[in-house]
Length: 622
Image (cartoon, rainbow, N blue to C red; front, side, top):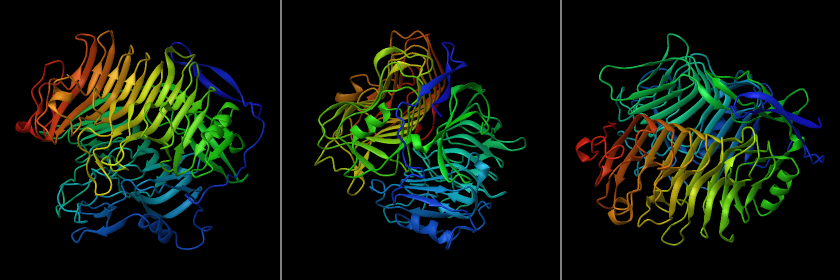
């Protein structure tokens, strides 16, 4: 086709018209693509040659080890089902892997480890039928799992998308940040926290997560998850969302949240999703043996999952498939984008020596297998590692990790260079995970950026962002100390009408989130203050976890928590949230003292109880 057609939003942000996007470059990319070894395309049963379960296990055991509890049963639907993952030393490994399942039956279980992404290649989740996937509790320093700690606290950087699991089978997905589920049909119960320590009803620690556009036939057991957001999830009548430690947020989800007597967890329910487009995904067209990029259209007022919603399909002839390695060139990516191509980044770590710039409307940048764009050691200071130019519409940035470098940057992702509106709707950023430090010993080399994400353009929508200054690092996972690997802010918003669904922001050295734009909205916020600051460089300077600018007339934040673990020094923070009085809606906002020293003296602007060792582990709601 000479052009593809996409819905756009008018000023009122309703999908009212189509805009034509010329393809520009008429040269074609290979289809099927030349996938690198980090991508495994798996045939369905009957076509696959060999033992599929053994093949799946070989992918996991390349980086991890599964062990059964001596007390754990083998029935995945029983309360005592259990085992644990030993992925010691894999937190910052360079390996990245994507497993793509072709449509059909896959009668095997996939253990999802660090930097593994599992995705079906069907147009609908039911096109790819997998027996099960799972991620279980991790281990302590002795490489054995016992007690609540660590539970799932370190189960980051993995994902599952676009498939269906076996009827009646519970799925165990014990994870924390940067481990999304999308477009999944779980035909049993989804369990997000698991038994530990030999007990049947105990839950291991788990610090929160994200799922979207899912149907869960057997209901959702949040267990001990500190916080969780389910956006556009469907649970049928007779089943429920249950438990959770402190805060659950349901946005545009269908189904009942079941409160238990005496529980301390609060559920924030938002009836519809105001403005969203689901994440782009890859499908395989079997009759034509061709790959397609599907781009779901934007909509407003959505409730429940939307697998049959309109999508635009792009042949991979118009998709540049990037590969990490010595031949990678940011200049080549920029040229492909400028010519009208979309870009898929295959699994790997990309050393980026000049900014990647999105210069055309309706461009899609999609990462597979936790593809990581890193500021190269040889690069000079960059204004932004990834820049979306002013005035664009319909841009999608999804499935990428962005990592700081030693010579610094203004931001890892910057959307727009000038504060102001874009035409129609500007776009969506989904499953974006930023990291400052961790993969290097900061005593030898420090990395930095001023902000991880800066949004200057109005109307941008974020959908699952984890913005993380590392609290531990190689080679022994010891804690980062002395405010090394400096970064001021996780998120800085200067545009108006920006929405965040699922914002996780941790350990930066100044205000963690700074919101200067009008009519901003955050549905779910999880924030952990830095461990290694002092009273002089943090507490006395008045920094906070979430700050709305004094000039802002309207803002809305719901289901938001700020935690403290001042590990190294006695630090007192006056307020977790700061905002102009009377102009910001705060719903179910709270603080938690996790451990350590000091305290958060109030929840908002000096109001709300102090959160200190006296109430350790208990949410202090405003």
